[in-house]
Image 1 (spheres, rainbow, N blue to C red):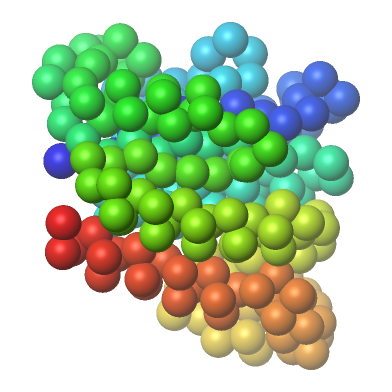
Image 2 (image 1 turned 30 degrees about the vertical axis):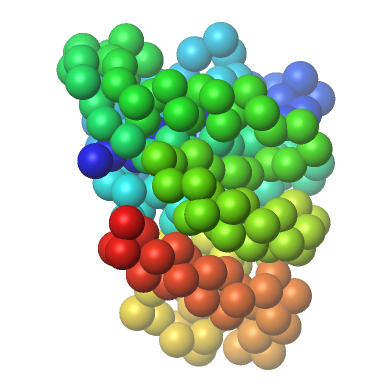
Length: 199
C-alpha cells in the first residue's frame, strides 16, 4: 500500500510564485526526489507519494510551510491504495491510490484536507477529525506556522531548543504551540497511525 497526496495552493495568484514555490519545494523534497516522488504541475498543483504512515504528517508539514505566507493555504486530498503502474514521473504513475487521491481532492469544497481509503469506517472517522482539526489549522498565522514547521522538523527538540533555533523566548514558543493546537495535532497523527495499522 502507498499514499498519494494531490494538492493545490489556495490564493497562489495573490503572491508571486518566487515567494511560495521555494517553500513548497522544500516541504515536498523532504519525502524524496523530483519527479519520481513528487511533482509540481499546472503552476500551483502538486502530487506527492509517501508511505501511508507518513501521509497525514506530510500534508500538515506542507500546510505549515505554505501558511508562513499570510493568506496562503493548501488543499490536499490523500488517497491510500495501490500503485499499479510506475512511471519516471509521479504524475504519470497509476493505481487505486492515485484514483482515490484525485477523487478525494475533487470532492474538497470548503474543506482543505481529507482522505480516502478502501475502508469506509476509517474514512468517516478520520475525515470528521480532520474537519474539526482544520478549524484551528486553517487559521494558523505565519509566525505560528513557522514555529509548527520547526517543531515538526525537530521532533526530539523541547520548547527551549526550538526557542534557540528560532531566536525567540520559550514562552513565545509555548504560547504559539498552544494556539496552534500542536499537542492535539500530534495526538491526531498518532491516532491516524494506530487506526491505519489495524486496516
